[in-house]
Figure 1 (tube, rainbow, N blue to C red):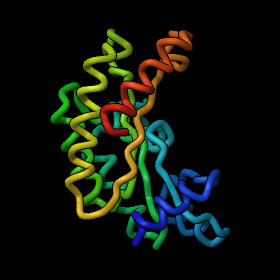
Figure 2 (cartoon, rainbow, N blue to C red):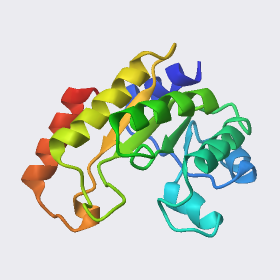
Figure 3 (cartoon, one colour):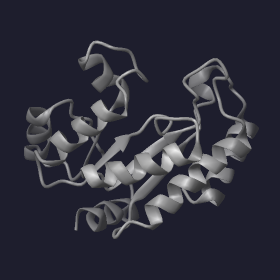
Length: 172
């Protein structure tokens, strides 16, 4: 039901989706009338006293379980780079995220290391694996692929569009 509601929100057009940082803010935001929630990787990491990309999958999934249990709203998450470089890591993150209560999530093409952005073919393979995992779930999981070019010092519109098209072709 949450996945169907989340898909319906997307089909109806634009909507605001806030980022609670704990159970209390999740309940507060639900009480204010928001129709869905999402997590913030940087905000959550900072609440643990670490920088973005340093909370780790286990902590993030525990946070997801906590938020998912706090309200009846659909919940999506910023899943960073899928918590690993291999396509299988992305697929496992989607499966585990769904088990924790997610109905949607994003995978970035930022590597989290010195390479900065994955090669487009490698990034598309990672999204393809995540999309296959999402399609195998018993509900429609909203998979978003994020191109981090402009956030990571690569202001190239043609490359950004090509990447997003490759990610869409891969199933996002």
